[in-house]
Amino acid sequence: MGAAALMAAPALAGSVVSAAGRKGTADQRATAAPRLNISFQEGTAPGENLAQKFDWMEAHGVTGFEPGGKNLGARVAELKNLLRGRNIKVTAICAGFEGFILAEDPAVKAAFDSSMRDIIVAAGELGSVGVIMVPAFNGQKPCRPHTLETREFLCEEMGKLGEFALQHGTTAILEPLNRREAFYLRQVGDGAAIARDSGSKGVTCMGDFWHMSEEASDYGALWSADGYLSHVHIASRGRRIMPGEDGELDNYVDGFRALKEMNYEGWVSFECGTRGEREQTVTAALELMREQWARA
Amino acid sequence: MGAAALMAAPALAGSVVSAAGRKGTADQRATAAPRLNISFQEGTAPGENLAQKFDWMEAHGVTGFEPGGKNLGARVAELKNLLRGRNIKVTAICAGFEGFILAEDPAVKAAFDSSMRDIIVAAGELGSVGVIMVPAFNGQKPCRPHTLETREFLCEEMGKLGEFALQHGTTAILEPLNRREAFYLRQVGDGAAIARDSGSKGVTCMGDFWHMSEEASDYGALWSADGYLSHVHIASRGRRIMPGEDGELDNYVDGFRALKEMNYEGWVSFECGTRGEREQTVTAALELMREQWARA
Image 1: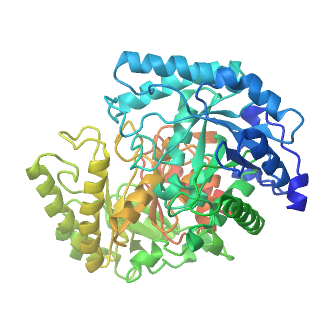
Image 2: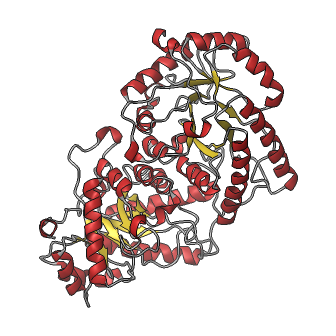
Image 3: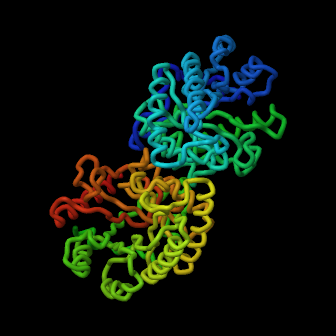
């Protein structure tokens, strides 16, 4: 882990949107490949508490932390304190809001608006790249139908949310999920187009290698978000556990090549469990990712 | 037009599916860039009849012809006769069927099934790469709703259609349109994923530079169909007229680079009108495309 542990965490705060990759087109490919910035969610690292987990992450060159959004406002001081002096930065915030943006019930929509904005404020205080959101999970009903009018509504609402996020130095991140979890938004390119059509630079999107089973090409899917991609999730590709636990299925090279060519300077963040002994499977996952990134 | 006029039409017939680009991943980029194969619809070239139009196309290095699908079966002999001895091949067939595949009315669905299969048979006789279809235009109602169940239905129906097409040496080509024309299928990556999930190699998809206003990245959109892309449409990007008539808007370089890197050996086919004098605007469009292809 030597060299990796020496890597400095990239400075995202204050340049959230440019870090999101709004750098232009394929014409402007980076000549020097960016490094792989790895982030963990709260449960990823071995350790009995966050301090122990952060120790483990620093020792293994993991420089990003993606907390859950639930009650984030009440945790800002605690998290800042725990991270003080460490080579770890807050990356994205994983959801945690109530309600959903495509709810037909005005009270459910209002709960989303209010709780999402609370999390955005806290995300800004933590220097986060953005707050991850899903427009509607399949189980969330009644939901606006998947029509042209609903897309216009979503773009308009996202535009307002994005401007609010920008005021707080962060973004709202649209996460496409596979169709079994959330039919409404399934592909990275669709998230990018909604971000564009929202009219706000405070709306970005992300890719998730697990959910990208919806895509015919990892490479094409990530390039489809050129200029709008602010975050990436990773997991094994058969059972959503640690990269490597599903063997040959866990090939990220095609996607990593897209990220390198796009000069993606954001994070690749673990969102997965494990079926093995955590110390061993997480360590192996880091090795696999670094090897594939180097090869991509 | 000298060099261009000397180019031989690529041999698509008999290798329709491999010509569709199922060549693998970004790992396998072509070292020698493919040439630009240009195709015209029936109304594109100057000329008072098809024979005159074909003369013009041959003189200008246009080696592909995309006829409409309406009554195609009755035109097979006539088209074969007109093309005999020429350096022009039939490329895709542009729609022409009745009904639509997502119709809720069984009679409308049956009209699609029957008329689409008739066109597929004729397409096979003409050596066509495939018959272009849209699952549902916005105006076609009643239409199955945009849900997970409808996607499963579509994949299953496309699978049957694809196998029928394969038996006739051709494919069914899904065309994503912009949301103002057809909300159901809007992005190239979505068409590719439906083609994949149909389970039949007789289902392919296409990109259309006009409709690709739905995409945040031409480059990403086309790469998203890697292995499934069988056809491409082109038009100007402001008013859907000849490439070049909308000035600076008519930049295809990013998309052309994707096609070259993907080793796309299919056709780029005109689907557009003109506001100018046809002889002049079509000639200028060919020059613009060739210059941008060379630069991509």
